[in-house]
Every structure is written in structure tokens, then in C-alpha cells.
Amino acid sequence: MKKPDLSVQIGSLKFRNPVLLASGTVGYGNEMSEFIDLNSIGGIVTKSLSLKPRKGNQPQRIVETPSGMLNAIGLQNIGVEEFIKEKIPFLKKFDVPLICNIAASTYEEYVECTGILTKEDTIKAFEINVSCPNVREGGLQFGNDVKAVGKITAGVKSVTDKPVIIKLSPNVSYISEFAKVVKDEGGDAVSAINTLVGTSFNIFTKKPKLFNVNGGLSGPAIKPIALAKVLEIKRSVDIPVIGIGGIMDWKDVIEFMIAGSTAIQLGTVNFIDPAAAGKIIKGIEDYCIKYGVEKISELTGSYIV
Ligand SMILES: Cc1cc2nc3c(=O)[nH]c(=O)nc-3n(C[C@H](O)[C@H](O)[C@H](O)COP(=O)(O)O)c2cc1C
Image (cartoon, rainbow, N blue to C red; front, side):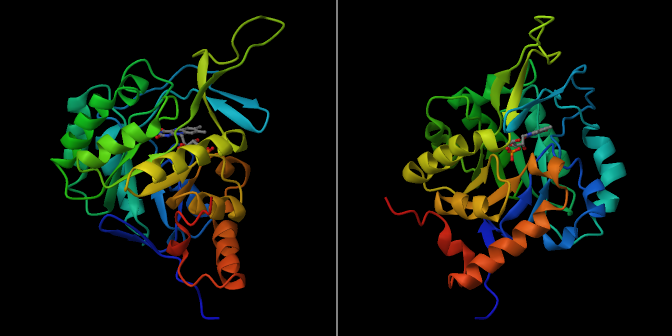
């Protein structure tokens, strides 16, 4: 059989394969270039960027949990200006779509950040984080409010021609209501899911393990929840979904695509094996050859129930 076509499309943007690296788990991509050939992956999503640099939360910011981890980084980042000056020149050297993830405390900040970054040719799309559980302002306060998500989608779309992906929170009753408003306001795709709110205590000191008390749960523990959210969106809204949540190997990627994902993102697995993306791409290619899948995009939403 000839090589399968692993390419997938979101809005006007074509990816060579569906394997993208998730926000917050690969910095701005530069450190990952030591472990994987960035020109071989589907795309890179940057750590959330805000207008001004943010220090994030005080430590402890990470706790290991059964089959997962809690993080409360608090959107530490270098800010839009330094990102353009210090990181874009390095990223320019690679032929890999760069997706800028944006986090903000106000509607105006989302729009302003996107307006500044859209002028950079290296940036091919935006992922708007309305779902960070680890900050007081600008996280779930937006992600839990359908109207706010709609307004942010429309506002960001008004300042860029590049695809806009809205990253949704699983900490809501019906995620599909949020996907619907994104579609209605012109968003090109949604990514699902961000982390789930969780916490953990030290039984001897009786204190929370995280300085922020709550954190976001990620890793294999959340995979079934993420799959259910992808399926819920796919069943009720006609919008591309980027599946995220506990993907550890190529089998998980295939499962997410069957459930309705057009593409996927790798998060926590990058901390366990920074070279995972390469192995996963090889695994999905072998699966396609073995099972006669000529175009991987045919798998999207191919579940039989
Ligand atoms: C340490 C850490 C930092 C993260 N930072 C961000 C972030 O800045 N912006 C964002 O949209 N998501 C962030 N996420 C969420 C991931 O992109 C992803 O949605 C989540 O971890 C679920 O995927 P996983 O189970 O494969 O890790 C972060 C996750 C982790 C573990």
C-alpha cells in the first residue's frame, strides 16, 4: 500500500499530520527541538501568552496524582512583546504551523493580543484559552459563560483572518453549548479539553499540596472524560474539534479521531517522554497501512454506535 495521507485541515490551515503539541507543555517549542524534528509534527501550540509578562503562581505548582498530574502554573509567560522579539526568530526556521495560544484577563486584552500577533507571518492560527482553572481573572470566569465565549470569539475573529480555535473547559455541564456559540460567532474550531479542576492535601500538615489550593488535572486519568466531551460536541455541532486529554500513545490518537477529533494535541506525555510525538506519528502511520486507511481524515467521527 502506498503511504497513507496523514494530512488534516482546520479552516484554511493544512497540517501534515494530526499530531500537535499542547499549550503549556512545550514552552515556545525551542526546547523540544532537541528531542524531535519539529518539521515532522503537525503543529506547535505555544504556552498561553498575555499582553504583559506574568510571573504565575508561587510554588508548589505541580503535584503528581494517580495516572495524572495537577498543575497550577498560573499562566506564567513572557508576554507578547518579548515573544515576538525573542522566540519568533527561532521558530521562523521551522516548517511547522505555529499556533499562538492567548490568555487574557479582559475581553479587550484577548482582542489586543490577537491584533498584535496576527501581523507575524510565522503565526498560522490562534488558540484562545478561555478555560484556565488556575488564575483568579480570565480563566473559568470566561470559560463558564456562554455569552462571554461568544463575545471573545467574535472579537478575536474581527482582528484576524487566520483560523481561530477556542479552547474549551470541561468544567461545565454541556460543553456542546459552548462549541455552538463558537461556531455561531465565526470560530473555525474548538479544542477540547483543558484541565479539570482538582486538588490534593498533605495528610500530615493538613495543608493543600498546591500553593493555589486548586489545580488542573491532566494525563491519562482524564482521557475518558475528554473523549466523552469530543463526542458530545461532534454529535451536536458541525465544527472541527481538536481532541486533547491524556493521550499517551498512537492508539489514543486513533480513539480520539474515531470519537470525532480532526486533530489532537499531546500534553502531559511530553513531560514523560519528550520524543513521544515522533513515535506516535509512526504508530498512526503503521495503523493506517495495516488497516487500509488511505486518508487519516476518514477516521474523524467514524464511530459506530
Ligand atoms: C503544566 C501544564 C501547563 C499548562 N498550561 C496551559 C496553558 O498555558 N494554556 C492552555 O491553554 N493549556 C495549558 N495546559 C493544558 C494542556 O494544554 C492540555 O489541555 C491538558 O493538559 C490536557 O491534556 P493532557 O492530558 O494531554 O496533558 C497546561 C497543562 C499542563 C500539564
